[in-house]
Length: 95
Image (cartoon, rainbow, N blue to C red; front, side, top):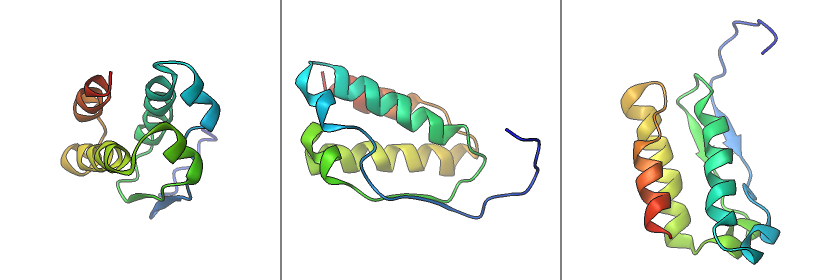
């Protein structure tokens, strides 16, 4: 935070939210994804777009990734500021 009050119109993440190495240890992928999505939640921008990268697919199947990223977007859309309820449920269901 540099004190700049300019608003960001949109954020586009171009894939590889988590690294393939996370898949080597049980629970590491979920933990890493949770940390990354929490960083997006600190933004006041509600217009966030994610692209799935190959490293993401080393950790999660496409359906699970879609559910996590849609839950993250819906949380921001509904609240204006993020809460982790939907994502926590999705991440918990992965275990």
